[in-house]
Length: 621
Image 1 (cartoon, rainbow, N blue to C red):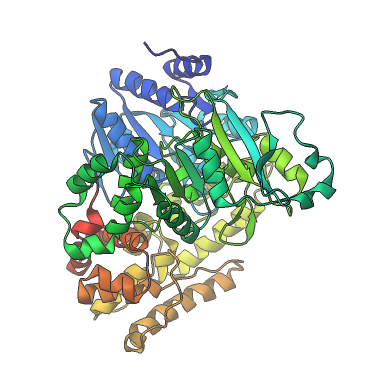
Image 2: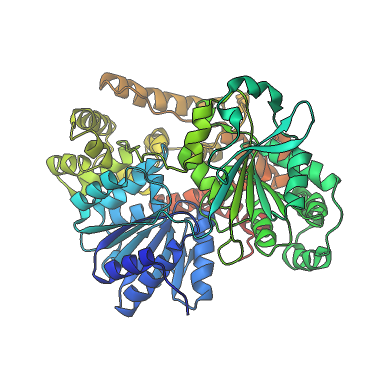
C-alpha cells in the first residue's frame, strides 16, 4: 500500500472535483504519482487524457512507464506515432498545440491535459507553444500542470484562472530525500580536499566572513572529488558539465584509472542483445568499443551529440546501477528519471547561446533534483567546486534553493497568425493574443503585441499567404523560416532535386559549423536568397524590428548523404556528432513526410524514405 503525502492527496481530490490543478513540488517528491492517479480517474470516467512533455526522450519514457502498467497508451512525437487513438496519448507539447489548432477530433472526448515541466513556458525558443495550449484548448478540458520550480506561482496561478476557471494551487516545499549542498575546495598550502561551506552546518566556515582567506583555497582537482565520493559511499554520482568535450574527456580520464567492475558480464550480455544487429561500420560509427570499455569500468557519459540508442543504453545502465560515475550535460536533468546519490558541479558557468553566465537558481534546482533516490537514500548530496571569482552572496542565494520567477517568452509567429485568422475574426484574434501570460505580466499593456500582429498579418497578406494553400502549409509545418521556400514552391515550375533538399534545409534551425556553400548550387541558392529578401523587405516596410532568417547550411550535408547513403562518410566529412546528424535526419524525415501529405508531391516522399535507416531509427523500446 503506497502512503500518499498530503499534497498528493489534495491534488488528486481536486482533480476528482474537476478543477484545474497547478502542482509545484521538488523533483522526486511524487508529482508523477499525481499524474498516474489522474489518468486512472479520467479513464474510469471514459475520458481521454493527453500527457505532454517538453522533450521526446521524456515522452518515450512516459510511454514505456504507462505501457508497463497495462494502460491503453499511445505516443505522438513527430518521428514516432504509436496507437494514436489510445485513451492516454503521450505527446510533445508542439504536437498537442497542432492538434488544438487543427480541431483534432481526438480532443472531443479529452477530459484532461497534463503539462509536465510546465515551467518550459518561459523557454525563449518554445515557450509560446505552452501559452497557446492554455489559450486555445477547448474550455471544457481540465489542466494538470506539474513543475519543480516556479517562484512567482501565485501570479502564474492567477493567469491560469483568468483563462481556464477554478484552479487549485498545490505546493510542497519538502523534498522526500533531503538535500545537503556543499562547497568544496583544495587548501593551497596543505593540498587537502575540504568542505568550506555546507547546508549541514548553518554557521558555515569563517571563509565566508573574511574574504582575505579566499586566497588560501583553489578549485579542487577532479581525482580528489572522485576519491571523496568513493570513500564516503556517495555513489552513484552524476557529474555535470556544460560542455560535451569536457563530459567526454573527464569520463575517459576516470575510465583510464579505473578497474573492471563485477558487472562486466551483465553489461556485455545486454550490450550484445541491443547492438548485435549492427554492421561493422555502424558499430564503429557509434564508437561502441570505447563506450563498452568505459561502461565495463563503471563510467559513462551522456550528451545530445550521442546517437539516441547509445543515450538510451547509458540511461539503462545507470538506472540499473551498472555504472557508478556518469558525466553528463544538463540535458540529462530535463525530467528524465535518472536519480543519483550525489551530483557534482565543477564549473558554475554556462553558455546560453548568447553569453557565458552563472547558472540560475532554477537551473541549479533542476540539476540537484537528480540527487537522492526515494526509498533508497536517506539524503541526497550536491557538491559545487569553489571559485574565488564568484561573490559570496551568489553562493548564499544558491544554497537557499529558491527557484527563479517564471517569465513569459511569448512571441507572435506567422504560423500562429494564420491559425488564428482561420478560425476567428481579426478582432477576436487580437483578443486571444492579449490573453497571453506575456500581456498578463505586462499589466495588459497590449500595444506592442498588437502592433506586431498587424505588421506580420500585413506581410502575410502581401505574400498571399492568407486563406489559401500556402498558408495551410505554413500553419501545418509550424516553421516561419519556411516562408521563403513555400513562396518559391508555387512560383517555380521546374523544380530540381536540389530545390527540394534546400526547401527542407531552410526549415532546420540546428547550428552547425560554418560551411562554404558549393557554387554548383548557386541558382537554387540565389532563388532562396531572393525570396528571403522579399520577405525581409516587407518586414522592413511594416516596421518589424526582427527579420526572418534562414540557414541553408544543412543542405550540403543532406545532399551528401543523399549522394553517398553513407552516414559515416558524411559525419566525418562535415565533422559532425552522430547524434546531431540523427536528430536532423529525423526532423527532415518528419518534415518531408508532412510536406508530401500537404503537396501530394512524390519528391518529398522519396526524401522521407531516404532517412528510413536502421541506425537513424534504432531504439531500445
